Length: 117
Ligand code: FES
Image (tube, rainbow, N blue to C red; front, side):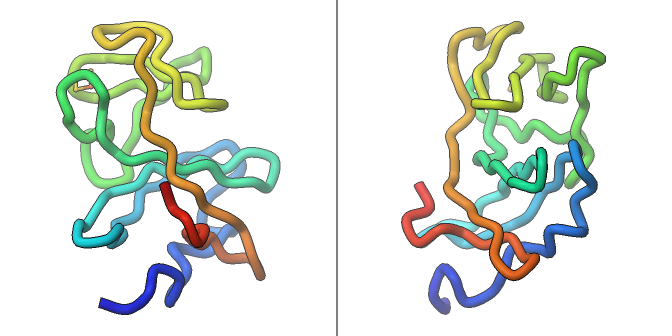
């Protein structure tokens, strides 16, 4: 099992500025897929679970759709999320939001924060 913070999720430099990435982590009992988004040297994270129908947002692991307006678009039915707060601003679950996961950047690596949710 190991503790939550035993290993970094990935290195910061593996996510280009303004890009999205996907990692698999263990949160408690469950293995979860996370969406990571790098902006201005900081990283935000959400569960890779769409609030519309519970599907992953990527069409293949780590392959996310981004609209011309910079929204993250769910590959299943097109719900569009702004990347500042994970709020759905268009599509079938408008007004809902992705579930945030607390992460931090330390020593050039991205880690789960001690209280990840
Ligand atoms: S599951 Fe994402 S839009 Fe339907």
